Length: 152
Image (cartoon, rainbow, N blue to C red):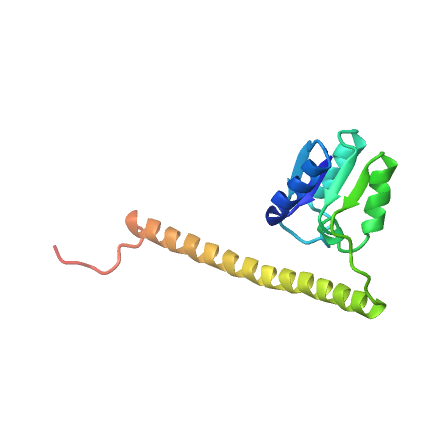
């Protein structure tokens, strides 16, 4: 059995597994979006399923595994004999509620990407400025740019 969790969910899921007598063989905790298909934890989960290292995956909510395409992931894992157990299944939602939730999820992810790229650009500019300052300081130390003439 493998539990896929965010750090704050660890204790609740471990208790759930202990109460049902599951042997926890791995805990995969990752920060990131359920919309990101390049998650290392998800790749590890797939590898463990292919290698027969588990028979069950326990998640607190479906969206901890994937925001969209949960059923595809579940079918993939089922093909290797792995059952997916959702501890807190979704409450019944109207189609409008599901649509709003999906749109908010997408908006959240794209906002994070936008702000992340801006942050990345800013960090790159800071690095360049620090490199330029270090080079200028090195040049002054080696006498290439002695600065103003000082009488001896």
